[in-house]
Image: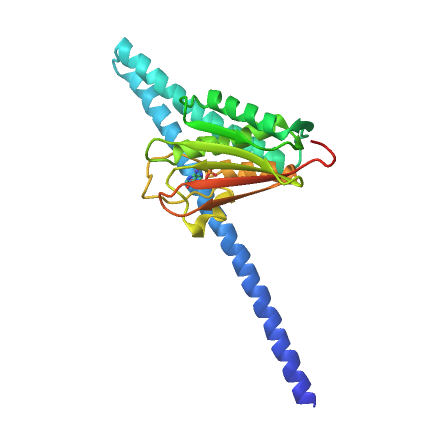
Length: 261
Ligand code: ADP
């Protein structure tokens, strides 16, 4: 009996140690992955605009540059500065959100009207040509929302739909509800998202290594930021795509306010 009990204790002990070991390994694996994605983003998104700025400055400082060239250089430098500014702002805003240092200014809105305004604002913000984005709504419900924060969400989703499309993009935003939830679908006809990445794209710094679209710039932070904002609205976001070149639909679900609408 003693040997049997000792054996059981030994086996349980080994199982516990193995469980802890593999759990740590998987946490470590996740961290390493995050670290690799972070390094890739920093290298690309911080280093490359900085190197290009340095190159322009050196050329202008030490070489004879015509007035026309100087103007071209300055406008390219402006783009690099904007890229750096955007990245730093995004990182700062996300870390404020993570530390719950942002107080959301929540108000009640009729969802259909709110999202129509947000989409129209995005069209202006992103200079989207006429006819690319269509909007439909059958919702009568109300939601509690921070308009500024949701503008970031819609800007991110529409900007991605434009970025990750090969042919003439068409984007449809639809808002409906089932009384309990308001459902916002943002569909595009872009390059699509393979099944294995559909959850991962919401992770911090995650980008799909796409041979399909090698020159599209990004940080892998937009969808993480989007997801965090939606989480703070007690909602959820998911994506559905039938795969490569078959378009994508991002679905946001927000709680509908009771006894309203
Ligand atoms: P970024 O666009 O800066 O890379 P995001 O967090 O916005 O970062 O998106 C993460 C990744 O998800 C993108 O790199 C891209 O591979 C993929 N993705 C996002 N939106 C779309 C879309 N509408 N169609 C296809 N792929 C997309």
